[in-house]
Structure formats: structure tokens, C-alpha cells
Image (cartoon, rainbow, N blue to C red):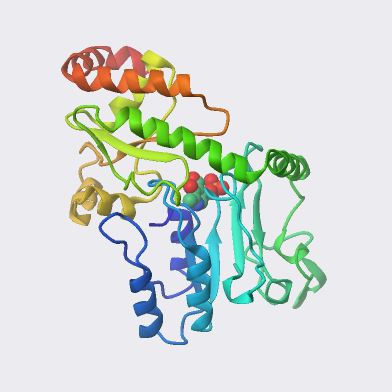
Amino acid sequence: MEHHSNDLPWRDKFIVDYISIDEDGMLSIDDLEDKLNKYYSCIRLVTVTGASNITGYKNRIYDIAKLVHKFGSKLLVDGAQLVPHAPIIMSNNNAEYNIDFLIFSAHKMYAPFGTGVLVGPKSILDKCEPDMVGGGTVDIVTHDFIKWNDSPQRHEAGSPNVIGSIALISAIKTLNKIGMNNVDRTERNLTTYAISQIRNIPNLKIYCDTSKMTNRVSIIPFNICGIHHELVAKILSYEWGISVRSGCFCAQPYIVKLLNISNEFLIKRVNNPDLSHPGMVRISFGLYNTYSEINILAYALNKISLKKDYYIRKYENMKKTLFDV
Ligand SMILES: Cc1ncc(COP(=O)(O)O)c(C=O)c1O
């Protein structure tokens, strides 16, 4: 269920295996346990998303931590979608439940692009080879000798993004002041309301279990049968000023499973780039969203669904002028 950025970077460095999902699209803890047993003591790192950027499901990261530690491995949590939306505790009273490594991105928590965070044990980070090397990463250099700096410097090559860091700290302080429990509750209420407003729209299919509201962040993936996801997103934007994303959301293996299509279908597009690409539309809420915005969204989706032939014709005619310039 991972974003490509928590999959592709590992592939050329390690032997990678994947944990299955169940029929609702949730990570299978049973499969994780089977894999931990299968590769017993060979697994260096288990890496899971804290919350999915497609279904919004939160993984049971503390239970996963306990399991992973039992097998002598470490856990890395991709917090890109969790940290801005819900509380997370890395160090618990009981160390079995600790999150060893946490990563997250500034631009997903209202700070500018270009900064990200890796939190991990200094004892390990002080031993790791830097992924990117350059100015600032070294203590001593000769033409044939390098002694890396300790962390964090050894992992921060080049001139630092000072403004990005200051803005990120400001974003963290602001979110903390609001309180992550408040953010979580506000966004969950918005999501529950949105689901209640759109779930009965004819031809609209939601791709997550909408009954599990407590262990998810504010994301709703859907399609309207008979109209391409990309067109739905464009109509919402053009006609109602509503911004959603459509497509595969940088998690193609997960999308393939959720849509119940074959990998072959995806791969066919290599030689046929004009084939329509699979995907969904994704609604996501931040703490600034309002109930009246959701009412407009529900109205718009209802209208698109009921008048889809009209919209398809209209946008087919407008295609050249509207989107291709
Ligand atoms: C779950 C998840 N992980 C990782 C990322 C990648 O973050 P970045 O854009 O900072 O590379 C994203 C971005 O969409 C994401 O949703």
C-alpha cells in the first residue's frame, strides 16, 4: 500500500518483499508476520506508511513495531500523510512499541516545498553511509581518505535550506498549538460528513471501508462509473473551483489491487501511451475545510453523476481550447 517514494528507493539497495493487503485494502498483519517468519532474522528494516495517501487508512504502527522488534528488525514509518493529520508518538513507555525511524515532508504540513525530515537513533545514523555526499558531510578529507561527520551533518550535504527549515519549525509549532488531537477530530468529522453526503450518489463507488472512521485520515478515493477520473477532476475544478487529485497518486501497485485490475493492464500502456490510464479521484480535507464546501462538493458530484453524458460531450468539444493550450 506504499507510495512509490517508500518503495522505489529501496529496490536497488536491498532485496525487497511486500506485505499483502486484505480485501478492504488494509495492510495484512498476518502476512507481515508470515514474512517475518519466512525470512527469519534476515530482515533489516520493515517500512510501512503511517497513513495511506489513497485510502486514508492508518496502519497499526505500534502493533507493527512490537511484531517487528520481536523478530529483531527495525521499523520505519512513512509519516508523510500521518504527521500533519494525527498525533504520533515515537518513544513509548514500553520500548517494544517504539517507532525506530520516522520520515515526513514539510510541504504536506503547510510549510513550503523542499524540506523533509528523517528522525532516527543517532547511534545508527552515526554509522550509516550518507545517501548524498558533499559539503558539510565530512570531518576529514584527503584524496584517498574520508572521515564522515557525525549525524545530522553527515546526512545533510550541501548548503542547508534554512528558510525551509524555519518555515517547517513554524508549521510544527502552529500545528502543535492547535493540538494534533483537535486536527484529527476536526478532519475526521469533515470526512464522516462528506461520506454521508456522497455515499448514495448514483454510480459513485468509494474505494475504502467507510465504516472504519477511527483509524483513518481525511481522504476519500472514488470513481463515478462511466466517466474517466481525470475528467471528473477537471469538471470539479473548472465548474466549481474544487481541487481534487486524480490518477494513481504515486502508488500504482496499490491502485491496481484496489481497482482489481491486472498488472498486465498497466504494462500494456508502455507501448500504447494513448490507452486511458486507470485511477481514481481523491478528495482530501485539511483543517481549514468547511461543511458548506462539502455541500457544494456533494451537489457537484451528484450533478456530474446524473448528467455525465452531457459533461462528457461538453468537455470533448472544449478539449482543444480548454486543456491543450
Ligand atoms: C504517503 C506518502 N509518502 C511519501 C510521499 C512523498 O513525499 P514527498 O513529496 O516529500 O517526496 C507522499 C507524497 O505524496 C505520500 O503521500
